[in-house]
Amino acid sequence: MVLISRVVPRPGTLEKFSNLESGLNTTYSVQRTVPRYSVLAVAEVLETGGTACIVGRMTEVSRKGCYVNTPSTLPLNSPLKIIISCDEETFITNGKVIYVHERIGMGVFFVDPPEDQVRILNSWLASGHQTEEL
Image (tube, rainbow, N blue to C red):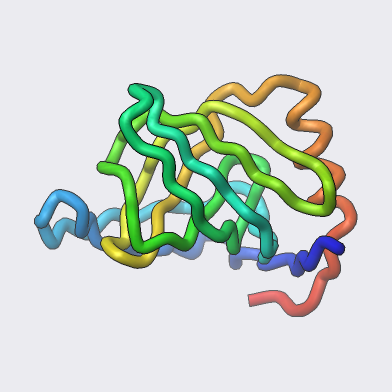
């Protein structure tokens, strides 16, 4: 069973986070352009160079990317392949690490997912349970 709840950003709100991976305390601002959904799923993150395979828990997803909770993260801007398993379906696409919370998790941007994979992702988002708006 998929456990999904919709998190709707307020128009014009910004999320701030630190670039902890680089050791700098630089603050970035990112404006979300699509709704996020809270989802519990297993995520496998494979570094494109084949040197690392990380298994984590995906906790947020949108049509553009997801957040993977894991104590082991990849460096910022790392190209990767992500495999998300949820409700007996698997979503596979290339991606890129867009932010890192050291020893907590990382944000992954989906890079050109194939149309058949987009259909799987859209089916998860469409079946979501809207709980409350933030």
